[in-house]
Structure formats: C-alpha cells, structure tokens
Image (tube, rainbow, N blue to C red; front, side, top):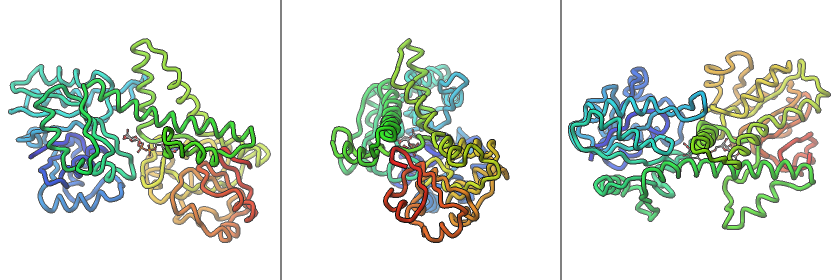
Amino acid sequence: MKIAVVGTGYVGLVTGTCFSETGIQVTCVDIDIKKVEKLNNGIIPIYEPGLDVLFHRNVAEGRLKFTTNLVEGIKDAQVIFLALPTPPGEDGSADLKYILKVADDLGKIMEEYAVIVDKSTVPVGTAEKVSAAIAKNAKVEFDVVSNPEFLREGVAVEDFMKPDRVVVGTRSERAKKVMEKLYAPLVRQGNPVIFMDERSAEMTKYAANSFLAMKITFMNEIANLCELAGADVDNVRKGIGTDSRIGKRFLFAGIGYGGSCFPKDVQALAKTSEEYNYDFKVLKSVMEVNEAQKTKMIPLVKKHFDGDLTGKTIAVWGLSFKPYTDDIREAPALENISILLEQGAKVIAYDPEGMENVRNYVLGNKITYAHTPYAALDEADALMIFTEWPQFRTPEFEKMALLMKSKVIFDGRNVYELDQMKELGFTYYSIGRET
Ligand code: UGA
C-alpha cells in the first residue's frame, strides 16, 4: 500500500511516520521548502518523544519520504491524508483555505481512485466542501473521509500506534474497506475502528476536545470553590475520579488548559453553534472560566508583595503548555509572564524544552533564560510554576531555599504536598487548596 500525507505539521508528521512504521510506503508533502529540506536531511522540526526513532528507521529503510511536489507525492497513493492547518479566522471559526486549496489541486491532478482523508480538526460539513472542491475538476472517482486525530502532544506516537479508538466518517463501502486495511495493524489489540457518517465524525472530534476542556474547567471551578469553602480539590478529585462514570483522567485543577487544540476547538464549536442559532451555554462558560483561570495567581502574587512588583525577581518553572512538549501555543505561562513584566517584575525562566520557542517567537530578551531549574532561582523573591515537568516534582528543597531570597512558591499545577511545604517552611500558594 502507498499513501500520501499533505502537510507535515504536528499531526501530519506523526501520521506519516507512524503509518510508515506499519510497513507501508508514505510520502509526505509540504509547500515549505525549508522544512522539507530539513526533513530530508534527517532534522525533525518538532520535539515529540519517540518520534525520532521511528522517523530515522523508516527513512533509512526507504518507506518514509518528503517532497514539496504534490503531483509526485500523491502518485500511486491509495489514500491521501490532508493534515493541514485550520487556524481560527477573525470570527473564531476554523479557516479552511489551506485544505480547500489542496482539494482543488487534487481534483486537477489525481489520476486514479483515491480516498482523501480529512485528518485535521475541521468543522461539520467540511468533508462535503472538500468533496465539492475536488469534484470541480476531477477526472477520476474518489471518496472523502473524515478521520479525526485524537493524539496528545507529548505522547503522540503512543496515542497513534495504540489508539483508544479510530473514528472514520464515510458512507462509501469502497473507502471503508481501504481504511479498515490501513488501520488494521494499529487496532490489533481489539480497540475499535468506529465507522459513521462524515458529519458525525467531524462533530466527534469537537465534542471530545470540548468535553475534556469542560471536564478540566469544571474541576477548576470546584477548585475555586474549595478555596472559599475550606476544602481540598485534590481530595475531591480522588473522591470523584474513582467513580468509573467520571473517570480519573483530566480532573487535574490548575491554571487553565492551553495548547493549540482545546482553546481553538472550543471556540470553533461555539462558532458552529452560533451558525446553527444554538446557544451552547456550557461551552461559553468553559471559555470564560478558562480565560480567568489562566491569570488567577496574579492577584495572589500582588497581594503577597503588598501590591508592588517593581524590581521583584520572579523565577518561573515551566513555559510549555504542558510537559513533554516544546509547544508554547496558548501556554498560560506566557500571559502570566507578560503581566509580571508589565508590573515591573524581572523574570528568570527555565523550561526543559520550551525556552527556544519563547525566546525566538514571543519574548526575546525581555526575560532571562536559565540553564537549570536552580539557576532560575538565584536571588528570586518567589517561584511560579506553570508546567508540571517531572523534574520539578522532587527538587532539592534545601538548595532552593539557599538560592532564593525568600521561600515563596506560587504553584499553578499543584505539584507539591501541602504538609511537605509547611514542614520545609515555604510560603506556598496552590490551586484549590488551603494557602
Ligand atoms: C488534546 C486532546 O487531548 C487530544 O485528544 C487531541 O487529539 C488534541 O488536543 C488535538 O485536538 O489535536 P493536547 O492539546 O496535546 O491534546 O493536550 P492535552 O494533554 O489534552 O492537554 C491540554 C491542556 O489541558 C493542557 O494545557 C493541560 O495542562 C491541561 N490539562 C489537562 C489540565 O489542566 N488538567 C488535566 O487534568 C488535564
């Protein structure tokens, strides 16, 4: 079997690499000449644990190729994945211009039947639009399938190779057979490939991400209430998470969800609701609460320093939107740092993977970047934690205390135990727990 993947962003690169690992021929196509050049030179443009091993093996064995030429890339491909960006437009709805442009091109150049797969997160009705764009010029038969991706950054390879489920939206028996064959190696352990119509598959992706964002947001609101009512959100999490109807995962309160998916997808689903004149109240609240949650520690910081942050040195641990990624899109750390700087504070940050992106694309030299977590603490008036990287969980507290000017921690991810902090003599602020 031979497939093509158009778009070598996060989803496209993982999709192409992981499918090549199943033994099929994969050609990835991208218009970005520099990126393709890098990939052809063995340089992976993203940090994703486990991807490098698969990438290098399959490139070396000739199964994984990269090109900027769409005609060459889709030649003999039975399946063509579209893994293109769908950035939010000015009104919050997903912008389909990249996908529709490629669909238009495909119609002109396809020489035999192929299944075209929407892998990107796209609004309900996109498969029909893609189909129409291809059909305008198509000389051959084709099917357009919606196959949303559920992988998480940081564990993308594992999620792709062992998916909980694969959702395929198609009403074509011919396309169904092709997709069944393609995914067979990845669902051998018995997890299902769920077939449905295209619109339901598209909605499934938005529903999944929005539900998870809502689950987190619900816990963030419980946390806010716990603070007022003298309860501990960590105990509540354990208490409710053991109910199998609720489940243990995605119940961690913190300074809000970030990343390239949840914020964008919740917003896009709200936009879709608006288009159908449906007032999706829960979704609106999720966005509103998350926005406020992201900076909820700032008033505590200000209060701690009697309203004046001028000249204070704040150490920051964690810049990426979550651990095991260098992705800083919509990362709560960035908004907080901007406010700290506006208020006159000096920021010294450390993140195992995210510092380069922050320096190159967002903050430049407005903050100082430390080489180690401890180097960030030198003469710090307080430490703020925004990402729960494992190395922050069990640091040498004595060393921290010696380095810091004052032993104050604002923990946006509830990384430490309250008793432990009390014993060590740190002034400790966290989320949804006693301070
Ligand atoms: C998310 C979904 O989990 C994937 O299934 C989906 O495929 C992906 O979006 C996508 O649409 O492409 P991702 O954005 O990589 O994946 O990250 P998550 O692990 O879901 O975390 C999202 C945010 O929620 C992070 O900021 C994280 O810190 C936060 N979070 C997560 C919490 O605040 N509490 C939790 O309990 C869990």
